[in-house]
Length: 89
Image (cartoon, rainbow, N blue to C red):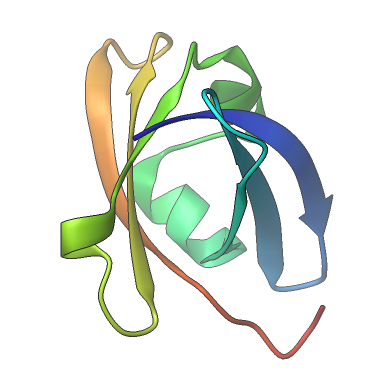
């Protein structure tokens, strides 16, 4: 399913990303450690600049949410697993 970025929040350790489905008013929330951003060489602007996000529900079992998006700055598709829950928010 295709999603747009609806909101971003931050804590000391995590980034909270809220995605809104393009064809319905449904949202998915994902949490990503800031340390993972550094590992993937991603910036928050990369999420804001992405045209859309694909959330693969078949590969998003348990506590993980698989999110794919085009990162224009890096010139590639990013496939990353994020957590569905976080204690800091």
